Amino acid sequence: MKTFCPNCEKETECNMPIEVYTCSECNEDFADYENPQIARLTARVKELEESDKYDTELTKKRIEEEATMWLGCVEKLQAKIRELEDANRWIPVSERLPKKNGWHEVLREDHTNKYYQDYKFFGLTKNNWLGTYSNFNRIVYWRENLPMPDVPQDGDK
Image (tube, rainbow, N blue to C red):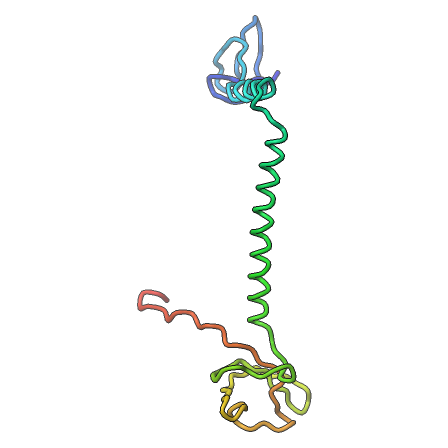
């Protein structure tokens, strides 16, 4: 028969020869004993059920408030995910060109319809990519340059 042993504090197989249990784990004997954690929880549940403080409407309100708060957090995280995905997406040149001077990651398409990844400088003054590309080797997509990670220190390898 399994019961809670107060000596080794485990739920174990115990023998009860004469109204006293003997634990098969620690071989100590004890009288019938209830797990103190279960006893405390059971007593607290009973106390709350009998108390006027146990207000189901208040509990529902708190649950709704918590749910609203977590939904707000989820919406903010989803918005941040969309923002990061948009910042990292490939933009077709036909859609728009960069809005600032600088180096951008580009995809070039050659005359065999193969794509090559590259970095090219875009200049607003001429509204063009640095270097001339023919239809045989043209820039078709670009994206903003993501910030480079910090340069490692001497100790970082």
